[in-house]
Length: 192
Image (cartoon, rainbow, N blue to C red; front, side):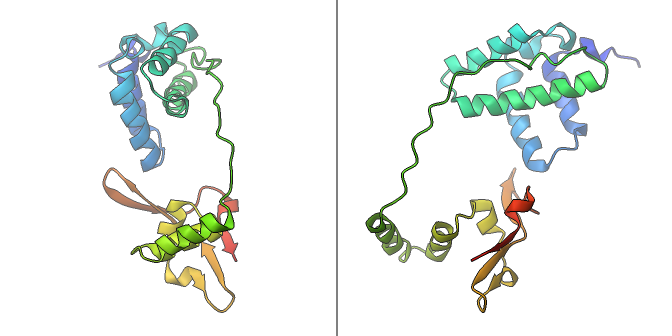
């Protein structure tokens, strides 16, 4: 039976698009949570896909911020709906992406202050007593991300040359372990 998809409610479009999006399991899961928890109960979620304008998306963003959601979280939710709109544009369901041009408040980033040698020593003393102490030590000295640390295998550790090679990341998505290659080539490689 024929259904005019651009007249579909936006929240329904998001769910349908997500199923066939080809995104990674982690991204599908994250976007799915934003769609279910934030988009579906919102005014923009109940609107027809073809009726949504930039002002509607801006109001959605402003409402999330007013509800106390942090700017990084709101930006991630916006990225998800923007991707859904982009797919609708590609499918000739709408002429333009109404999520483009939405304005966010400036983020105030905390100034990075590295630990002093005394602070690093105190951390290492405490880490030595923890069951994951060696991982905490490796993290501190290499700067590896948690998913990169979790993806390390013994074959990635070369004690002779004192290097680690990042070949895999490991995360938990919807209660299941997901292993994959790092996102960028810069993430792959050997670390002293």
